[in-house]
Length: 291
Image (cartoon, rainbow, N blue to C red; front, side, top):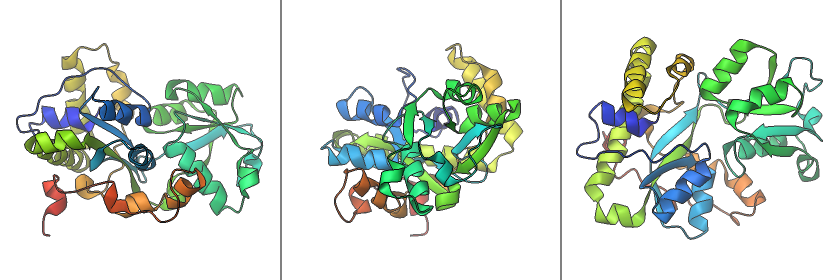
């Protein structure tokens, strides 16, 4: 369940209506679609937002889209019978991720670096792209050594068993907001009221989901999924474990600066990062309350 869809159902979008054009499990692809005009709004990992802007795409992050905390996080799992116990055991091993150049890749690099591995050793850890729906089984059958899992696919996989957690992203950065919804700059200039409705509405929806009883949230999600008639499996909703976001889905400088080292190592940036170049809270009324 995306936050824009929840916001629309809750009546928080103030005159903005949504048109579904398809699903995308890759954040970088999603915001690339926004940059090219295929969509008006897209969500991706903060580092991917920086990479897109540094490549010359005129987009701006306007509200946080997901994060990591005790309930919702990206965990890295191996099979129960695996010999992988500590960071150095990952040298020469494969890790399945949903896409390259995004959250999981940055976390793996940051984690291994924080644990004392050299750049040369980190290069020996091979990332393999797999759909999240296939990752757990690939780990259990030893097609890959480790798999990154989050959200419903993670909860379901852990419940089925056969996996053991190696590490999670919150071990590296504690609780943090990790991605944002972006809009094109020309869209913001032409439709500032729509930008405001989207950013504030999404923030309200995020707060609603985090402050209402889980049973009520899942009941609402179920009604939305059944009404949109896309053939989605409502059973998966029972594994919902939140969006991992901080209060009001407000964007902070640290949401970008924490990835500065990885962005430099990956050749996306050179030197210091200036977070304010990539985002604004101007259109999120909740983020501006009390300021």
